Image 1 (cartoon, rainbow, N blue to C red):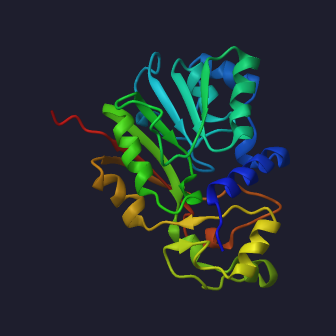
Image 2: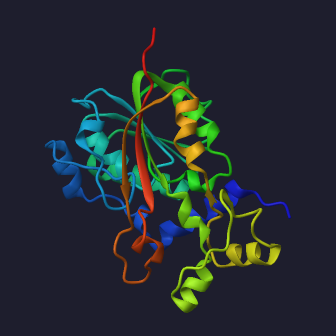
Image 3: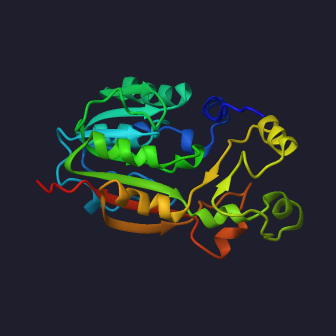
Length: 267
């Protein structure tokens, strides 16, 4: 069965904006005002703000790419803190959230729709910083993301990336929902298309779920090193508390990882 993964996931994220899910709710005017005073923090993963030491000492004039980070969350705060921000995302509705905040609060934010694996719209060495919240789980191959991020960064620029712990994809969550137990079902790396039957995929499509991919740590972390990055920071995180959903895997392990990778100037 031929599935256009990018089109499917774009449609679902457009719907998630309508449903007002967590990663689609824009920051408030109060948060933007605080960022203008130098009081701000952004998230790559659900609950831990990115350490201040991961950013340049002064964001004024810093050219930042929000990679697959639409939704009016990271971009507006960075712009209010003085950065020149471009948001690149697959979902028009998510990009519209950034434009809404920019218009509401008088910020300059450029928005571009595209595939995170293809940044050919940008010349080499275009940015000082890339902010890439959890999103590469929506593509089957993450290596093009790392290669393109490395290309468009300037020497000594940083890639701040969040991603899923691949171990969370081991489990059959239908069993978890029904029986409240964790049951191992899938091999890693997880591929929503290859590891599901056609019937299961059709059910995913019908229920409005994204098609996800659980990449190995070898490609998530080792892949950044392979394209030339130096890993300069790492932390783990878990899910936000949610009365409607609790991932039982969070009771046993961190569900997310964030890294700071530097494009070292070796000239």
